[in-house]
Image 1 (cartoon, one colour):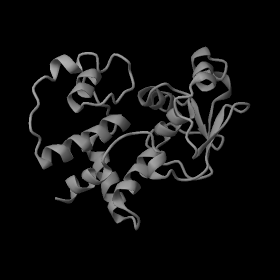
Image 2 (cartoon, one colour):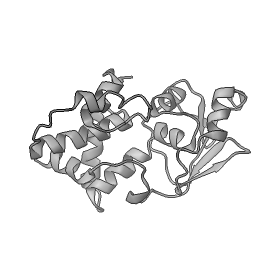
Image 3 (cartoon, rainbow, N blue to C red):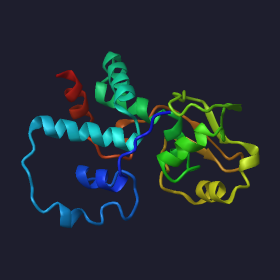
Length: 196
């Protein structure tokens, strides 16, 4: 499985956004970014694309496939792209609260700790469908880190995912609306980047 190997904090500072949610990620941003460069339209589109790729941890080949699929969709391409990315299994695991980062969620999925509708699934890019129940395997529910994350992480209380604390699970109720997705990105600029 291909993964992004670039230094995370450095990437966050370059893009000007704390992509990974770590409190120290932007610590040196003010001191290193004293000279403001004028950014061209192409540069702005590129930065927006890189933000989205870095946030979801998707590499270029897979990301361009998602963009092509979004462009074929009948609804607005930008919102369609975000919905596709939000419905990835690793992201849903993160939104439910099993993991404190998308990277950790991806590792949990790859190691077979996650069940979808009661069946083990170890493909992080699997597209979760509306009505699917994503849960943690029974033997891992006593793990202190996972249970603490699930019970205490209120990072994302998104309205399109219903958490069930008794079953250690979450259910995708519906596709998210564009304003409910908790990331700040200009998705139209991303589509325009690929339209050129």
